[in-house]
Image (cartoon, rainbow, N blue to C red; front, side, top):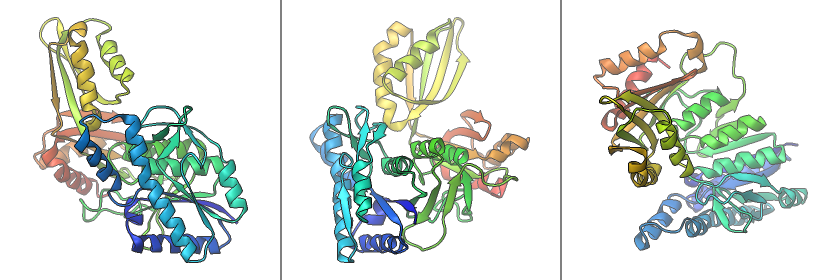
Length: 401
């Protein structure tokens, strides 16, 4: 007997037909004498609809109240799935995030899990019930509902798998695994049988939409073996684990992220401590910064350009404009019409010339590079958004991944 955590995304539970299909997948695993905890997202585009409803009323709605609103979507999914399982003759119980023991910090709309009190879930499992948990949510120390940010149901599933010591955490999506590129963009993208935590973390952080990057971080920390597979087709998926094989492919995948913004700070004093002032200010507003380039401006000045998530752009601009005079920023320029295209692969460490090959592919496609960032297993470039898909296709073909 094994303990298995299964997570189903919004497209997998979007209507009655899909709920019945998901219930049959769960029932099949239960019939094999396994204990099962299921984590569900809100149905279809429910979360987007809730956000739109709030924005009809307020341009900047309270983050606390948005968490209260958005958490209801997962509650609907969980209750409906439990009802569906009952109809098939299986014992099931739905639990909200707080009932399932998720305790978080107080950072509304992007909370972090502090700990999980697993007593309630374990009691239900001891009664041989299938436990259906609302993903994406928990409560803070003030008993306020919190949500974990976009893709937070993945994080909920991995956190539960870690807390319960699950044998496997299966993430069901609308694709049948992790591909070398988005198969909707690149026709000859290849599904991977396995991928390392580090490679998956880079791909997730760089725009691949298969797994939430924080869920991969947590899986690596607690050695939770993940499997990404389809809820639409009964076939093996992609295993995410520590070690895949001795001989690595040079490149594991190509990813694209269109949800970023570039901010340029022009004409700052060229003296020690300026960069610290800028990035400590952004950190205090919980704005994550990615690619950074510092260049020499006019005599006595310097320019700094960096990227942030598009959703953080206005927060960053508000903070920087407020402190521009104090820091000595002469001009602030922001641009969201860009894409970040990246290649990822542990094999890059032992294969020289990878960057040159990537840049050659972009050159032959007549795509200009604005910024470059590298690490041991990643190279990212910033390009005009209109060329994002073209760049992914060209790079994928160049490396024949």
